[in-house]
Image 1 (cartoon, rainbow, N blue to C red):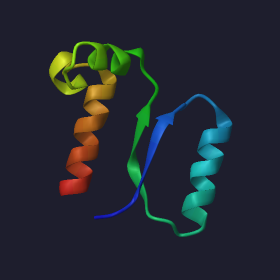
Image 2 (image 1 turned 45 degrees about the vertical axis):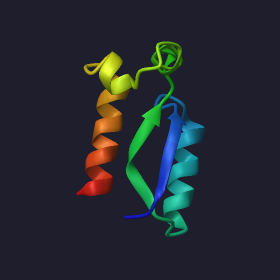
Image 3 (image 1 turned 60 degrees about the horizontal axis):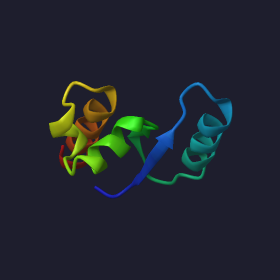
Image 4 (image 1 turned 90 degrees about the horizontal axis):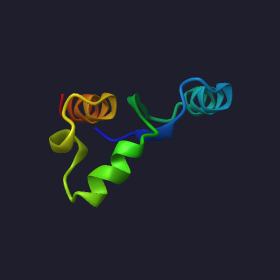
Length: 73
């Protein structure tokens, strides 16, 4: 499955959602999983460990796992 992954999404801001809606309105393949901003990503880079191993219960780690599921069915 190919599609657009929305990265650094800010769910509380209206403009990002408007842009996502416009992409979908143009029938572009936007995936349902959105990856939000998080300091934990920088920390995972600093520790040289993927977020899903460093903080598996973190909200963003869960979003990455959901994206994996969406891509792999």
